[in-house]
Amino acid sequence: MFSAGDPVVKQLYFFTKLKTYDNGTCFDRRVGSGSWSKDKFCKTSLKGIEKSRFRYESNENSPSKQNGNWILYEYKDLNPPNQDVIEYS
Image 1 (spheres, rainbow, N blue to C red):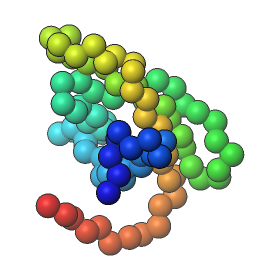
Image 2: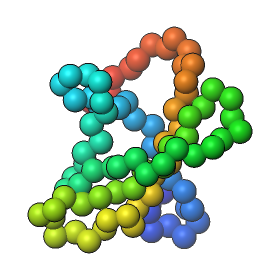
Image 3: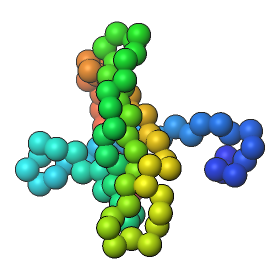
């Protein structure tokens, strides 16, 4: 397994199921003592893929000073195939 401190690892990839708020229309991107805020849409040459850039923002009362120090690129398949979802606990 790789660790974030490994000098060979330049990028980490995570695949997650996005959670929505109770109304089901917006994604809940809260994590730890902050959240991920969409910074901008990015152009991509990949057909059927949407790319967005997010940055981490700490809560007002958080002692963390990590605002904007973490960047996340999200790739969304606009035409996903029908797949069986396997829930892991």
